[in-house]
Amino acid sequence: MDIFERVKESKVSEMSHEEILRLKEAVYKIVEEMELNGEKVTIRAVHKKTGTHEWILEQFPIIREAKSRQRLKRETERRKQILWDDSGDFRKMVEESILNPYSVLRKRNEAKSDSEQ
Image (tube, rainbow, N blue to C red; front, side, top):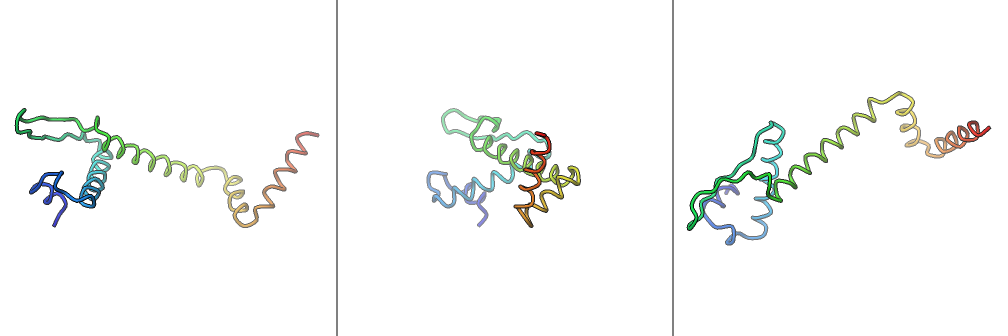
């Protein structure tokens, strides 16, 4: 059964902890996709006593968390891009440091001693 179908047929208070976690994860994915498309996320809820409410979900913690996850993903991708788009020297230094970490330290120390003289 689809998690959204389960929500339609019962109250959240009747759901198990695992079902609530799956629902949150599904909402995160949908919000991230909508955020990428530049869409505004709203929800319409019906309360027995007070009627219909429309909320802009950006004020809710689950949405803020989804946005911060998306921002983290973008920053990580940007850092990866900078690493590979940067000058060849930096790229070479990273590759060398992986293969032989001591050679990079030795080169740094040599560069420091040359600049001090």
